[in-house]
Image (cartoon, rainbow, N blue to C red; front, side):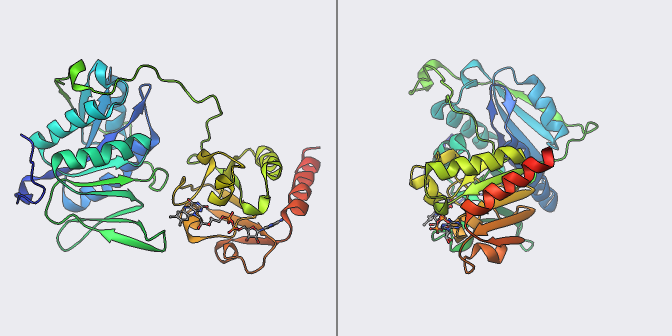
Length: 343
Ligand code: FAD
């Protein structure tokens, strides 16, 4: 039975376990699910709870077994042909039904396109709050509540938010911020198959077809090397130079919001607070000033190299190596050196 009033008092002690909603595309578990299992395990251990992966899709068998190896104590498998492709109605219905039934203490969802659609709808349906776009999760040692941290006020400060009166505590978490759970072949756990009651009429918006974007997929979250360009790159032609260097180094191309907003490169390349969070081994920022909203997305890079003609640019405060120069002089020189090394 749905709780209708958000402020209706509930017995917090009835709520147990940390749930991770696992997202699959074409039957493959997305990395964000594994990142949330890694983080969820730490939280679950601190409060003595179980870590539960909630898997939605069709023919879930192999994925469910994998999730146990990635640390889930239990997998709740919701298997139905109408769950093969994401729809807001179907996913909200089946997940909210099991939340009402099983009462998890926390529910973690990836802040992917799907998660950003599902999270608020689900929170509204079960009558709890949602902390969106979290970059850090911790347990308050005094009362076991989850401390959920996210950038606030345009990224100028980090806000830590709790959900004191309602359950579950629900958060969406940005991909690429947390470390993936370790794979342990010997790990055992239980898989609970739940009968899914779902009919066509439960889904108001029908997915007629799934058409993949023709452009190459940008995989910034997994990239080991990223060469990123900002407003200093000065146009689409400038980005050809960035692309050339990235290709030479076997890396991906990133961008600041200024470059994306100028229409020089697509939004899927944007790094930062409203783009992707990355953690490569090497991040080369070219013509990027280092605004806080950009740095939020790159601060976990192992090595940051900045190329900027302004020695006062804030990027130099976080860079491990700084090159004060015109990028149009320096990048061709670097490419030349790499060519010489190859020959
Ligand atoms: P600028 O700040 O204009 O810097 C350009 C730099 O290039 C300068 O330092 C200049 O010295 C240098 N330069 C110019 N010519 C050359 C040259 N020839 N050679 C070398 N150096 C040169 N920004 C993001 O990047 N990602 C986000 O996700 C993001 N989210 C945001 C969310 C909110 C709510 C807000 C308010 C802002 C957000 N921003 C984001 C925007 C952010 O505040 C900055 O405006 C943006 O990052 C600036 O981009 P930039 O460094 O490329 O441009």
